[in-house]
Each structure stands twice: as structure tokens, then as C-alpha cells.
View (cartoon, rainbow, N blue to C red):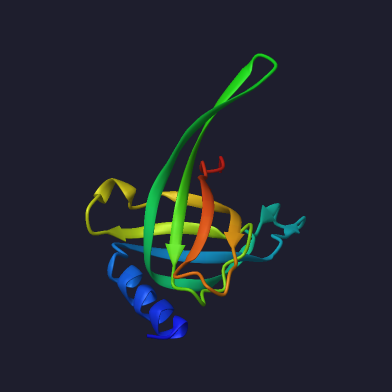
Amino acid sequence: MSAADFIERMRDRQAELFSTTVNVSRFYSEGTFDPDTASYTTPAYVTVYTGAALLRPDGDSLTTAGETSTEVSSFTLKLPVNTAIEVGDTVAVTASDFDDGLVGLGLRVLDVTNDEWQIARRCRCVQQTPRPT
């Protein structure tokens, strides 16, 4: 068996483990303020991937700055190898085979691993808290 055949076989096996459905979107354009109506249009995002993924918790970390402590929940997200995901993209969990509690979870991509030998596109993400409206 060649290395290419082995990698392809492992990619197929990895894809069989994908039990979560996600929507990955990327910032497209700034929102605008209309002074005549005193209204603000929300920023636009473009969807770059919708489909199967594997989401695993990486653990929580407690960050302290001065007298303020913040707990950050981090995750590892695996996607098909050729998924065009970038640092800064937003990930929304839309379905999960094993944990309905993940549905609606918002993540921000912090790091993307690129390697021609990888069997899945691996990303490090943090939970994103909703902004006030």
C-alpha cells in the first residue's frame, strides 16, 4: 500500500467519525450607519462550509488580568481536509448526533493546522459569547 493510499484510507475513516454538523462563515463586509434613519445594518458574512465535522472539547482555561478572571472554553474542530477555513472564521453548530446541547454553540477559529499528510483539517477554536444587541 502506498503512502497516498494509506492517507486516503485514513481520511475516509476519519470522516466516518464526523458526528456534528456545522456552518462556517467568514466576515464579508462592515455594517453601515444610516444617519437619516438612525439605523445600523449588520455586518455581512459569507458561508464557506456547511457539513459534517467532529467537535471535541480541549478543556477550559482561567485567565486572570488584574482583578478580572475569564474562563475560556476551547475546542478542537476537525473538518474534511480541503475545507477552506481560516483564522477568524465563525463556526455555528447546527446539529449533533450525540449531544443536543452543542446545537447553537458559537465558536471562533484561532488556529488552523495545514499539513499535506493530515487526515482532517484541524482547527483550534474558542467558544464565542453572543454580543449584546
